[in-house]
Length: 194
Image 1 (cartoon, one colour):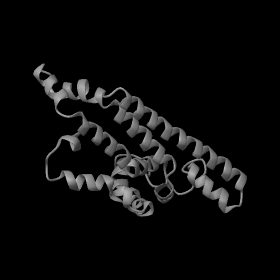
Image 2 (cartoon, one colour; image 1 turned 60 degrees about the vertical axis):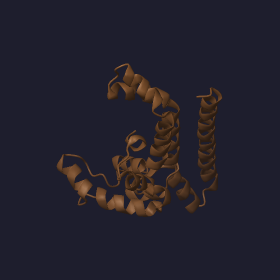
Image 3 (spheres, helix red, strand yellow; image 1 turned 120 degrees about the horizontal axis):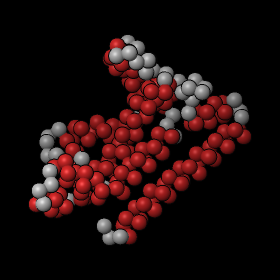
Image 4 (cartoon, one colour; image 1 turned 90 degrees about the vertical axis):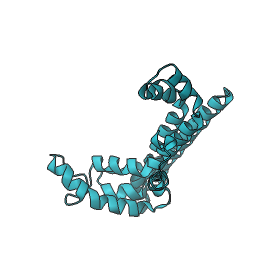
């Protein structure tokens, strides 16, 4: 919302930081996150000082890394959706004495529903197939930090192609279903002329 509405000189640098995972090799992002999340890293040490467990090689660390890695796939569709709303609906709500918070929740959020669906779906789907960041932050601990993409890699490394094929086919079907869902949501929205 803020990126769609702001006119500050900080907008371009913040957009670049948000989009950085699109061009940065996942292992580079994973490496620096591992350093930050390690028990002696600035985030890891701060978290442990608050009584939290280690973030490196943990499910919580994987979630943090996945959120940061998938951020462009969530932020950019939402930003585009909020920018496409234009000012008129918000101005109309303002003439009816709606507060800025009311305008956001009563006007902008409902009108941006398609963007929220696309952003959530793309962010989740992108995270499911992640390999580099996940391997760097979480390692490959079966039952704790091993995700499907790493399990497929393990099966290929041990020449267990049947298991690798089963997992890969499942991810292929899942990925297709996600993209189909996004396309149908976008088509439905476009079909209404909104």
